[in-house]
Image (cartoon, rainbow, N blue to C red; front, side):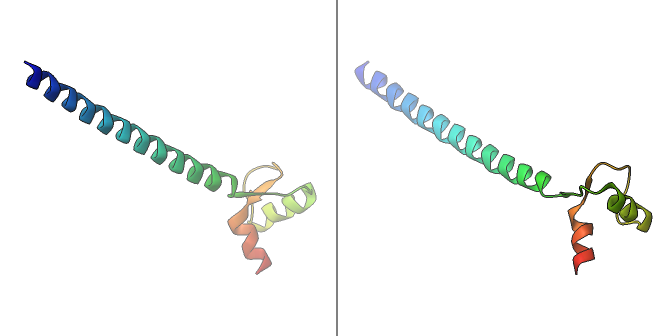
Length: 81
């Protein structure tokens, strides 16, 4: 009986350690994905404070939509090159 009990405790500890490793790995992956997505979301638009300039960008086809004081960074960077 003692041998069976010691094996079950070893099995329990192995399962517990695997559970902790999996939990830490999932949490780490979630944090990495979260940081990547937030960095990507914040870097897609550029603040355009002048409404007249933004209206000119819309008229020329470089910006879309209404006057929201933001333009797509990828398109605006092409204007500088």
